[in-house]
Length: 585
Image 1: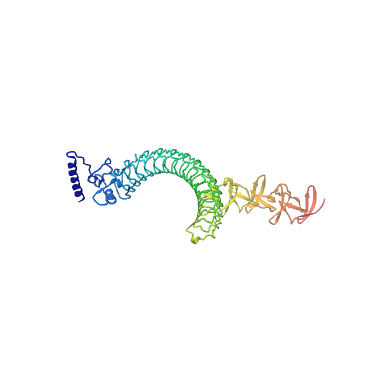
Image 2: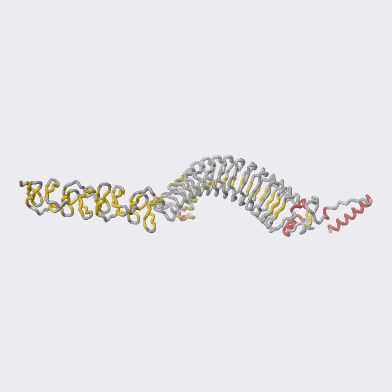
């Protein structure tokens, strides 16, 4: 009907013009009668919603529904300023070039393989993430402020024609290079998950957020980005990172790189730091009083001073070489994972806000959590907490408790079933020389190893013990040479009795624990008294003085049955019942 009326109106105008100017006539076609159009047509041209102009059926349906108010199959491209075709399974946006006034385009999560918006010079926001784009043309988009083309298949992308770009995200593509030197107004730049090996951001002085994680960067220079507050550069091969000219930095994620040092002393606003899995041997956060989350797992850090970090709520420092950790100055701490270190000291006695503790696989022999009444998780297996029962914990209301296996501080390591090494806190102690009880037997440890060749004396406490073939022999009754002396052994230790000790079928005289080779005396052994000379039983027939009396000895012992005369040193003495009575001549 509308076309018929317009046709009649056109005929009337032609007649009137013929009357007024004769055979010379000029006709200006009305915008309502154009059926097809190209990007070079007049901006007043109406466009027919047909397959030639817009090949994708779903895109045509969207345009019809959104812009063809009277349903005649035509739209005015000048009125199209915003297009939102998010998740509509569209394969092609051909025809988009006709919308010269387009400012906003959201085609997120469709099936596009190519997109050309170079004719949409007024476009200031383009969201084309999660498609299958292998080609994206933004070659002449001076008004473009925001470009999100995340999760596509782009191998190259030229944004030099977008000098006004402020927010740019091209994460998770297949880019090997990216030049943003012409994008000096950039505030946010995200390019993670590509294969970019070099990134120059020295011209991007307005940059506040940079995300370049999961690339192939070996270096990153951010010294000319003083406004930078958020930096994600994890999962690269960066060996050096200087942040001394980034005073606004609040978030720094640089984990999974090759950093050997990291100086954050100039980043006083830093609230979150993750430098996991680098090659750091030290980390100084003394100047970072505002830090709330610190993750420095999988490094070689030996000490960590957190006394000047009162805002700290989360600490993750597992797999380092820490031997002590004092959290007494961190009252807001809620979560700590310090597993797989060498911790012998962990001070959590002042951390009432703790809900999660993982200190497993350390060398702790004590752990005080009495003030941690909010604790929900405790993981502390493979320590030396054999004397810790944690009876004060509300175990019934905890969500996770794993005390697991606890080791003895001192132990013996068996090799093929044979006690071999002495360990302390799980490591062979090569400085150890001592006696150690293991499975009911006492072993002699020399330089950290059971010495099965040793037959000697070893002092333990105030007592000397007899070791034979590496173990205390509690059944031994013998003599043992130690130094220049021979010692009497009974029940595995030195016997300080005045007695006789048999060794190699000979009885020797011992007193005060060792053999006496100088005394000429008598020694009672069993029910007999034996004559001692040169440290052993002498079988001479003679007299021997003992405790003021002279006794008659014969065949090595006192003969208390003998009565008669005895010659001694040229004189004759009268003996009665084995005791000398008087000199006869």
